[in-house]
Image (cartoon, rainbow, N blue to C red; front, side, top):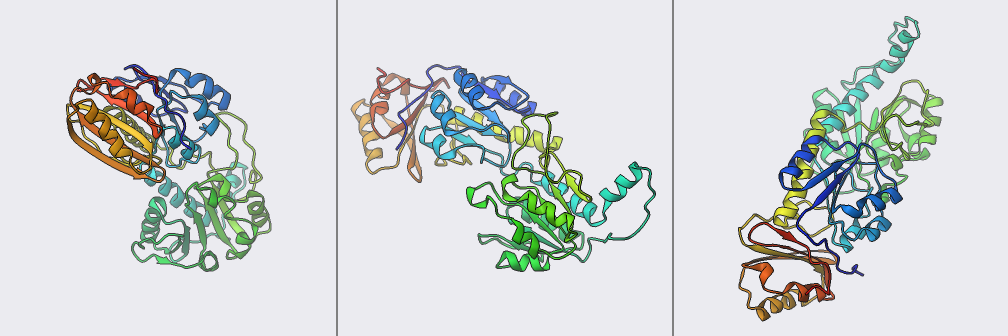
Length: 423
């Protein structure tokens, strides 16, 4: 059931950006007239609830958890921007039911993650980590034992989305053969070959790399029996989600010699901020590369993500556009110079007719109207002159189907009626 209608009253929006979001995002939001406060680390649930009382926009990366309890406790929150690909740190259903728009950056750090994967595949196949450690320990270990070219070897990609498919292209350019597995139908790029089962991929791959999303069904995807079915002497990479892989099983197969090496960038539990203590069953193992969730952490990627997500947040408040929102119906809207009413509502029959009857009762002349639906939600945006002068907002807020009402007049002044009792 949808939450009661809630909204922020007033024209000054405030954004809280956590976890070292790129300064480009700050500049874009401030240029749009939004007040911005930044903090370097993540906040736990209690801290987040207390802090968000004075903000309508939240920007996070991967550490801050926006739970149902947070969303229920902060009725003034209007939008969340996750400056990353993943959104599993946010309860998307709870956000949608309360009319909180969520935006992410699905493409902006793809190249950075792919380049790290390529670097790790080469490093592990050449056993560069072992050679490097020996020299740092003062041992001259010049040998070809266990070292191979990647040319001619087979890369198995689990998850053929934006990252997996781009990795496929670069791997082929290095002379690798590529097979991939994905639960959805995906177009193979280049000479990559789709396999029908994970078993088929594990049997032929010299390197296995995971690039799946954060949906709950992927939890525990790769466990001990999967490692056992990999080719002896193969390598394993996980740059996707920490909860996908059983690290204890990976450790066992590294120690037994069944796997020649591994690279892991994401972990089931990660420290909140830079400098915190980190522990893992993979620490100290030969030919194992551990990185602190830096797959997308290049200056280029972070700047691109900052631009992308901040612009989506800006456009949502300036035009009511929800393009690429991950949890609300998507409407691509432009500025029109007239008043605009954006109504997020429960997707039940008769809502549009009831909305338009309210406008008719108040003598409003509709200049344009767009509607989109997504699951249990509908989103109707109506352009109308003198929108804040016609007195329809109280009736729209009082409708039992209303989730969130936003109003912008012809002078670009936003207003968020305080609730059903508004006059």
